[in-house]
Structures are given as C-alpha cells and as structure tokens.
Length: 67
Image 1 (cartoon, rainbow, N blue to C red):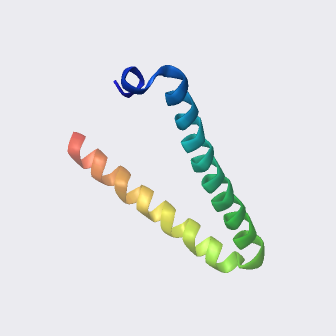
Image 2: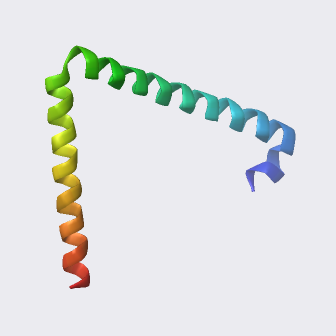
C-alpha cells in the first residue's frame, strides 16, 4: 500500500536505509555481547543460565496447554 502511494524506487530507497540501520544496531549488539564474554565471563554465564531457565519454563507452559 505504501509502495503504491510513494512509488517503488522511493519506497525501496527508504526501506533499505531503515534496514541498514537495523542491521547496524544488531551488529553493534553482537560485538558488545562478544566483548562481554571475554571481559566478564561470570556475568555472561549467569545470563546464559537465566535464558535457559526461561526457555525451560516456556516449554513447560506449552506442554501443559497440550496435556
């Protein structure tokens, strides 16, 4: 719908600009996480454990719905 209002080339130009910005932010976050792994492995391990606990709880809730 937006493409039909503003035109295909302008839409693609703006869309690519936005997408490049998002990719840049994702790249920066990935680099920050990698640096944290090397500078503070304890915090990194704690975060990883917490993430796994969260996933386990999520699986339990999903299994309870189907049981």
